Length: 254
Image 1 (cartoon, rainbow, N blue to C red):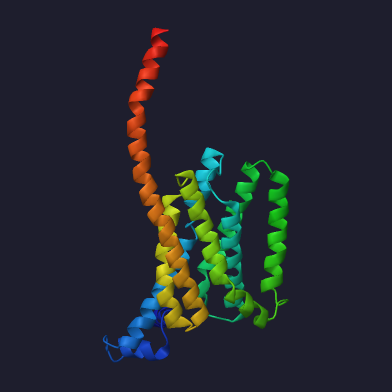
Image 2 (cartoon, rainbow, N blue to C red):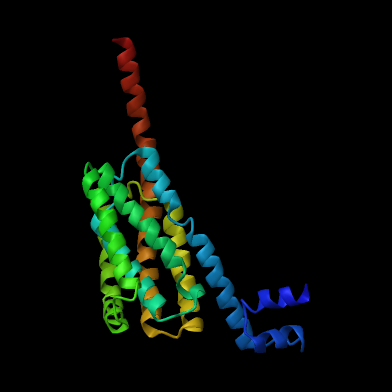
C-alpha cells in the first residue's frame, strides 16, 4: 500500500521532493512547493478544461442559435489552441503543462461547427469538421517538423489577440454579448492566468509564457464586457417592462 502511495505522489513530484516531504519531513522547501503547486494547478486546469466550454455549447444548443458569436474569432481561437497543442506535444512538454488545450480544441471546434450549422450552412459545418481533423493529424502525427511548429507558435500571440478582440468588437457593435456563456468566459480567464505560473515552472518556454499572458489580457476584456452588458441588459429590461405592460393592457381593451 505504501509503495502505491509513493508511486502516486511521484506523479506530482520528483524523487528529491518526495524524500524532502516524506523522509526528512522538510515541508519548507520552496522549490518543491512551487513544483508541487504547479503540478496540482496543471492537473486542476486539465480537469476543468473537460467542461470549460460545455456551458457555451449547451447554451447554443438550447437556444438553437449562435447569435452574437463571431465565427472569425472562434476559428482564430481554434487555430491558436491547435498550434499550441501541437507545439507542446511535439516538444514533449509534460502533459500537465498543456493537456487542457486538447479538450479546449475539441470543444472550440464543436462551437465553430454549431455556429455554421445554426447559421444555415450544415454542409459547410460537416466539411469544416473533416478539414480540421485532417489538419490536426498533420500537425501532431509527426508530419510537421518542430521548427515549423515553433514558427507557427510565434504567430499565436497576434492571432490570439485578433481573435479575442474581434469578439470584443462584435460585442461592442451589438451592445450585447449575445449567446456568450459567462461561466465559460470566467473559466477561460482563470485558466489562462494559472497557466502563466505553470508554464514558468514546468517548461520555462518564453513563447508559452507570453502567449498565456496575452490570452489572459484578451479574456479579461471579454469578461469585463460580460459584466458591463450584463448590468446594461438588466437596466434596459427594467425600463422596457412598463411598456410591455401598457401594450398588454391595450390588447386586452381591444
